[in-house]
Length: 333
Image (cartoon, rainbow, N blue to C red; front, top):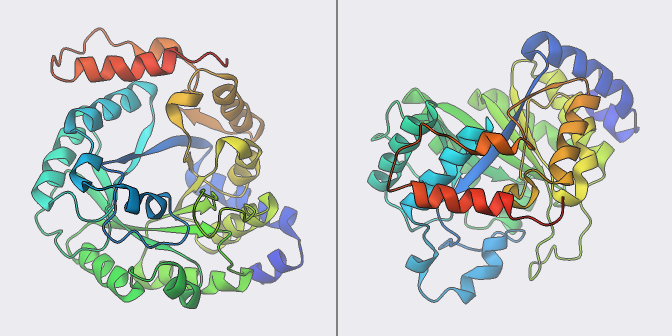
């Protein structure tokens, strides 16, 4: 089957049927809710054309003030654990956290969730100091076309990303990449993505749809069509049955979820968690999962899951309670 031709000729429904069957055979019906936890809101590179951080770099006079407190990060991990979500990865811009700090934070998160952490913290070879607290290393490839990549992400060399992931594999870590759809790529560019997956023995791919941020060149660009997005995911699932696939969508595109799950996604991510939890938007996420015939791990609506009588960390408790108040304080239900 010519998978790319199926996308180009709009035969996406056939791809979805085949991909869903393959996904169930290899992964079952379980769907995870994933959340990236950011360590900061600053990136010293700050020149990826689509990125929110690129619109903020010039406004941040003291980058150290863009660092989150460790207590805040750990509290978010605890709340995520209570809801039954996975931490997709620790993320953040370049240049604010050193490896020993990230290692300590990762160890603390591991002790909270019982699961090793994925990292997505830029291009670095300084990963030999990590241990069992780390599940894998993510390379933010972002653009599905290498020539477009040079223009859109000029400071993130593909060669350097590949070098980092190869080192990660040598050290025994799993490997992942991220791809954003809607940046000007074409269906034929999937061949490039698939070559990366195959050559680097990638374990997980996260596909995102473009989120047009204000004050970026993509501010007035449309998000990719839902069936194009689903077709890309479905073709990738058919090509790589064992691959873990996470897909990201936004609060204004929740209708993407059902088709993406039928296309073979194992997890969904990119939600503004504390705006959505327990609201009609959270309920919509759960309905999308149900009507795709899938079973959700964790919850987007159960307020009772936020409480935990056994939690006795006096340092983190005020921060955890602050997050819970943000979840409970929403008016739009």
